[in-house]
Length: 136
Ligand code: AMP
Image 1: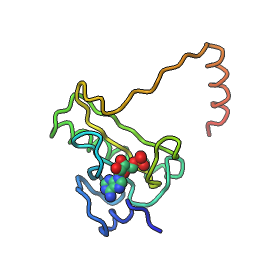
Image 2: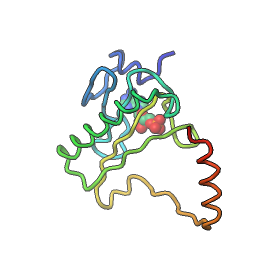
Image 3: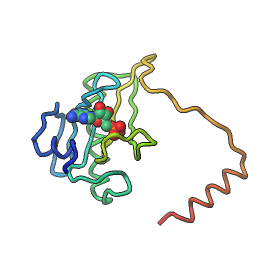
Image 4: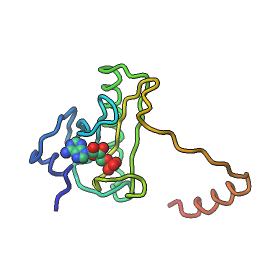
């Protein structure tokens, strides 16, 4: 079954659209964290970051920059977050690759920063080695 975002891309479900090209679409989030919270999707359905072909990923990145610029011009926020969730443990609800652009205003408390931990230098180095071996 097509994802809700595919149905938006195909025009079956309405959305407050901001920008569209052959490969990508941007529209406002229906449950916004802040005013102007936007989503950028690839029209082709891929569940998450790892499954999106690189050229499509680049197209989403370009649209994200375009929309972030437009949001900044239109709403003059103090800043914005660009976020992307993968897997339900990370808060992903719609399994169709998308990027959030969340305009931020000082003191809005819209998104909690993560709790920062500590790590020793050796542990960081071991982790970096473990991960770097898997880079393809
Ligand atoms: P995520 O948790 O990263 O998967 O984010 C999914 C986002 O999609 C949530 O912020 C939802 O509010 C948003 N969303 C779900 N359905 C719709 C819809 N029909 N139109 C616009 N945004 C939607």
